[in-house]
Image (cartoon, rainbow, N blue to C red; front, side, top):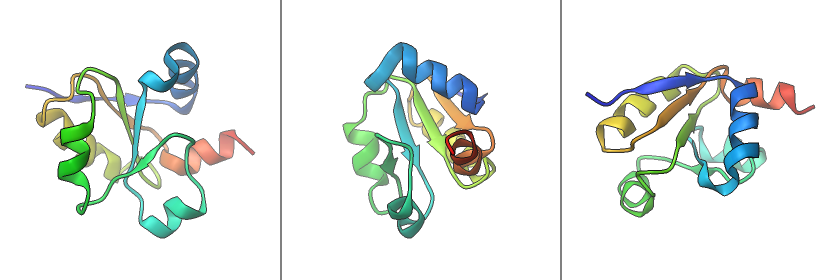
Length: 103
């Protein structure tokens, strides 16, 4: 059974440094929060664009799911792993932790 792994902000920083645009980031926060601020290169993932995202994404590249605080992203990461993504991660602390590390 496919599953996801937890990823710290520091690990994400290193993953992006090592693999650049090979890392896919799905931000599941609401559109207004995403529009206000988000991790560069991330995609705002919602129920409306979920099917298209799955169809158009590279299942072999690492996928990091981001929410507000790292709770909701766990369920979304588990679901995306079940859809066939090989490497799925939930960002611990979510966007809040990312933002704190970058101010």
